[in-house]
Every structure is written in structure tokens, then in C-alpha cells.
Length: 299
Ligand SMILES: *Cc1c(COP(=O)(O)O)cnc(C)c1O
Image 1 (cartoon, rainbow, N blue to C red):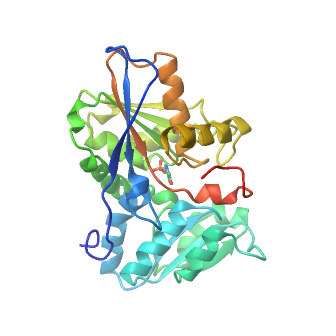
Image 2 (image 1 turned 120 degrees about the vertical axis):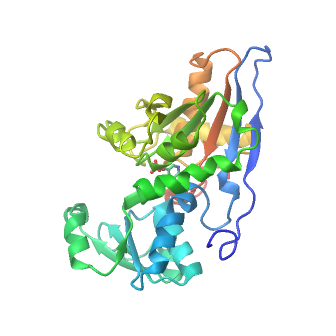
């Protein structure tokens, strides 16, 4: 077993969010704080990597995966492989920067071998795999059924899971959403907030990971991308600062800020039926915030 033995995880905590409306029929929102699981590489990436790394430990050659210069997935992989003493390579999208940003510096310090690829080369994942036949390759963002199997375990951290009617999470590759939907109960709706603009293949990619019957419980929303993947507006940064001030909840601009904004917006628009109990998954991963100039965020 790797989790709990080689990597010590803290407990995730439940964080109820107080609402201005006190009507008994109003919806309630509770946050599952996966960001509390681990100080270095927090959040959903652990869950998604778990079973890939189990498989990789059986093979002698190292692990490789893909990501950008601020990727939570790259850093989480570097950290987990370091702990498990598995050699690892990160294929990084774009030219090697003269000076590494904090995510890449941390990954390198954890002995991840970094290989920088032009955007064109990066796109051709099959060619990269062919060039490295001995590496155990994990797809970008941990996408795949193995990743979803790990993500399904997220819901084991929720006490009284059955009392929730809706589960809301940020969605990139859709692996976490699929895992959560697979582990959700028949009366629950799982709402994925896509952080990309016009990601038309997302529904199909999520569907490919769902077990029978889970599809009826999944819904994707595409209108909370704030300009596209890793893009942000001043409104989003203000919302992040406000959420920090009101609830002491740190959000990241790539994923959780957009999803939490969506959850609040849907509440305000009475998207949820009266009495709904909403579980928001704070999927951790604050790497994207390190791309901001200092001083923009209060936390
Ligand atoms: C990677 C990531 C996601 C997206 O997960 P997918 O399984 O790719 O949809 C959501 N939230 C955070 C914080 C992440 O780092």
C-alpha cells in the first residue's frame, strides 16, 4: 500500500458555508477540503495517481507524464514518485524557461527529469510514447479509468455522504467527475464545472469512464470558464479574495475558483431545489496561483 504508509495524508475536513438566507427550505453548501490532505501536493491528484503508481511499482522502468509549467499534476507526480522512489520524467509543454517558475523548480528538486517539448511535439503523445517504450506513461491530468477508480475514493472522505443531494466539482479532463459519479448514490446529481472554453469532447471523455447507470447522475456546465483554461478576470480574483475573507477558503484560479463561483451563482439563481444539500469538492491544487504577481491575492 502506498497511501497512508509511504505517504502520510492528513484528514480532509468538512467546511460548512454560511448563507445569508436562513429560510429552512434554502439549499446548504458544504465544502470537502481535499486541499487539507497534504501540505506539498494537495488535492485530487493524489487520488487520480494512486492506482497508476500501484501499477508502475510493478514495472522497473520509471513513470512519465505530461503537463504545463504550472501543473498540479506534474508536481503531485514528482512528489509521489519521490516518496515511492520511482524514477520519473515530466514532459513539459513549451520551451525550457531561462528561469524555472516555482512549480518546475519544486518538481526538479524532487528529482523529476524535465523534458521540454514544443507545442507541436507536445501534442503528438503517441510519438512521445514510441520514443520511450520502457516508461510507464500516465496520461495528461491522469485521465483514464485507472485515474477515475482512484478519484472514486474521494467520496470515502465524506461523513454522511447519503445526506447530500448534489455534488459540485471543477472539471478539467473529467476524470475526477467520472470517479465521483461512479461512487455517488442513486439520488445524487454530480455537476462538473468545465474550466475550459468550448471543450466539446469533454462529455464523451467523461462518458467513457462512467460505469453503467452513472451517466444519468452527471451534468456538465460550460459557461463558467472565465475566458478559458488558466485564464482569469479581475472579477474572478476579487471573488477569490472575497471567499478568503468571508470563509477562509483558499481557491485557485485555474479550477476551484471557477467551480466555487459557479456553485454560488447557481445557488443565487435557484438552480437547486429547495432543501438541496450541496457538497462542493475543494480539489486542492493551488499551483496556478503561483503564476500571479505577488500582492494580487490576500492569501
Ligand atoms: C486537476 C485538477 C482538477 C481537474 O480534475 P480532472 O480530473 O482533470 O477533471 C480540478 N481541481 C484541481 C484543483 C485540479 O488540480
